[in-house]
Amino acid sequence: MLQLFTHHRSVSAHRVRIALNYKGVSYKSIFTDMDHARGDRLSYLNVNPQGLIPALWAEDDLVISQSSAILEYLEERYPERPLLHGDIAERARIRSFAQIAIADTHPLNNLRVLRYLRDGMNVPYEKRREWFEHWIHKAFAPMESILANHAREHDEQSYCFTDKPSLADVCLVPQVSMAARYDVNLSDYPTIRRVYRACMTLAAFQAADPDNQADTR
Ligand SMILES: N[C@@H](CCC(=O)N[C@@H](CS)C(=O)NCC(=O)O)C(=O)O
Image (spheres, helix red, strand yellow):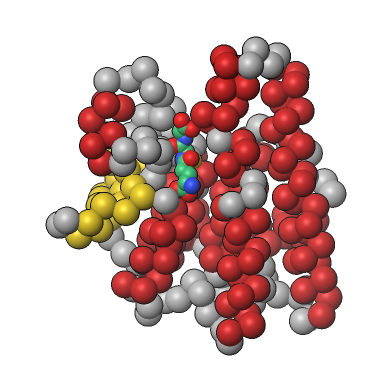
């Protein structure tokens, strides 16, 4: 069985949990602490030398790190319920949207970045908070306009781009859930909130939610 090194608050692991659930792939969660001070952290470095979560133990001699690599592997290995669907233009649209979260947003607000601001650069809480919110809004403003324009042009659909969830939804939902957890004001993003609510009616998304993980405290 596949084994996923995960943590309930990890945005990147959240993406992978949604994809695994949506595709109906059984997996075992290996709950892994994100705290560098913990002893089990050292053994996790043997699994993923970067020390970042998630990693997927996919096959005997294959551990995959980096959520986008894991998502692509799952898409190729379990194509039956695709998350990258539609014609070539639609797939490009989905990939492009997903990268706003994966490449341009999450890395700026990752734990190690926020910790470095605090411990390496002595940035006070209010300024760290400003940083955090700044990058969330820098992502959500264009995401909102992309989704709202698309909804206007193609009879409003339940999910990001189609009537089925895609990698765009897989990447949007964890970003929204994290922003909501930190009480970021999302009132300027009605389309994002609508898509989030639609996704959260699905069992695959509910089961992947940080609040529904066995390591949630
Ligand atoms: N680009 C990586 C990012 C992985 C990542 O940064 N994971 C976070 C949790 S979402 C982590 O392990 N953070 C620990 C840290 O920053 O020290 C991916 O998509 O998998």
